[in-house]
Length: 394
Image 1 (cartoon, helix red, strand yellow):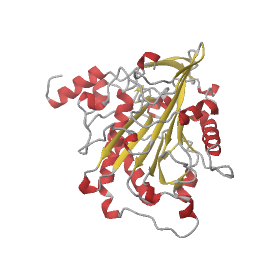
Image 2: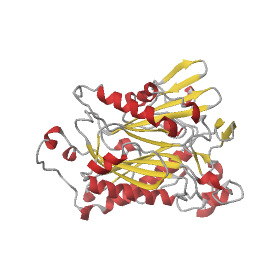
Image 3: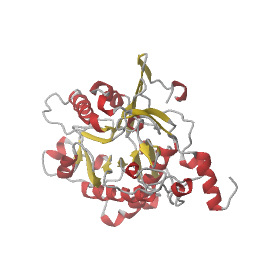
Image 4: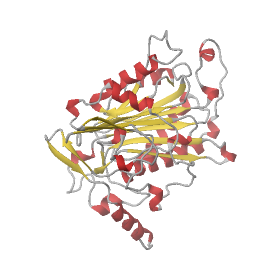
């Protein structure tokens, strides 16, 4: 993403050196289009005003995008569940593993205690350690945490080595920390930004995508938001149409090496529904159905992870609620099903947005030790395929 692609009036391009461009912006315009701009409306539920994870009140997102020379194409994305002291007011959470070929730091403590106490950091495979340092140091520096002596940093990753010289481990903890510090509510930058800068999906450029769903008041009026870092493969399906097959680029075809379906996806789910960690784990598991709808092959080398958390103040693990027997609200199981539908739809659309909003990127293929170029999904062809499928004019 270039300086000219930022939204007007939003700061965030910092020139580190002549060959290094560091972007830390809450929102940026993009030459590509979101799914709904193409008339693609997955599901039956309405999105929130922003159609983003930030439709869940209090959730903030920040990116830092690092371009250096011809071979560094990477970054980090931070999701902050609420604006208070996250360590003191922990949020209930659940985590689900679809296929475990990945490095999700902090997952076992989420499984054991059912809570999150730091921002969620997404980055590349070999910079997970720096992501953890950034989250830990940021947490220790928050007022009220002067006596904290244990922090469970939550850091997810995908491997961006097809466009990024990942062995250089170019991201530092200080750089990643800027993603946390720049996290904001409002529209979320999508595509080849932040942790999605160097990712590849279905043979085209992947990246960051987000979407949301709002339940009608009669069903609780709750919001579910999803953010993804897409870097996986399979046979691309767009709102039920086999676009990957029609374009001739898909897993096990003659046009794409079989290994190109390997990769990973990180899915982060936020909701304001007062869910227990048990039901948040159930919600996270449903997000995998949204992943399947896009044609994911869930291959051996794919790391497919979902983290879900609730922002409802009535279920937060505050100091008072941790010091003795506490009463917490909990949405009953019988009212869970609409949230299940919401997260499936939002996950599917977030993934599509990650593809549709990503531009072509030139970088470096670490395995081949050679320059690389990954094209953006050709939206003109996608539009034509969908029009043909629906029997409408393009």
